[in-house]
Image (cartoon, rainbow, N blue to C red):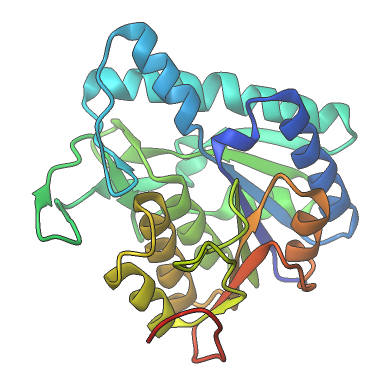
Length: 280
C-alpha cells in the first residue's frame, strides 16, 4: 500500500486569490498522481486580523500563539470556518474531492494542554489554551478518506479530554499527523524558499545537527524555530523526510511532493547528511 503524503500550508498562502490558485493547482497535480493525500492548514494573518477587529491583543512567543479564551474563539471561527471552507470549496471546484475537517472530528486531533514553553533564552511561558497532539489521537478517519481518493483538509484545532477546543500550532499538528499516518513525507509550505542561512540563501539539506546549529546560533527566526522542532519530532517518529518549500511556486510544491529536486526548498532528514551553508 502506498504510504500517504501530508502537506501543511501556512495561512498566508490561502488568503489572496492568486496564491490560493497556486495551492489548488499544485494539490490537483499531487492528488492526480494517486498518492493518498492529507492537508493541514494554519491561518495566522487572518487570525491576527480577526483579533484586531475584536480588539484582542496578539500575543506570541517564538512563533507560538498564546491563546486565552477570547483568542480561541477567533481562532476557531477563522480556521474552522472561513479558511477551511474557502480552501475546500476551491479544491472541489477544481475537481479535487476535498473534505473539510478540524481536529475535533472523529477524535483525529485529540490534544493535551501544552506544557509551559521554554524559550531559547530561558524564559518559561504559559501558552494557555494551546494543545499538543496526544498519543490517543485517532487518525482512522483521515486515513480512510485519503485511502478512498478523498483529500481531508484539516484545520489545526484540537479537542481536549475535557471536551474543550484548543489552538494547535499547525506545524506541530501536521508533523504528528504525518507520523501517525505512517507518511513517507511531510511537506511544509510557506512564503520562504525553505530554511535560510545567515546570508539568506536556501540550505538544501539539513540533518538534526544542522537544525540545532541554526536554532542555537540565532539564524532561525521565531516562526522557523517552531517549524524545525515539529520537523525534528516528525522525523523521530518515522517520517522519512520533511521538505520546507516556497508554496508560492507551483512547480516547487509539486516537486517537493514528488521527491524531486527544487532550488526553492530545504529537505530535512533524520540522519547525518552533507549540508551547505550551515556553520557547525
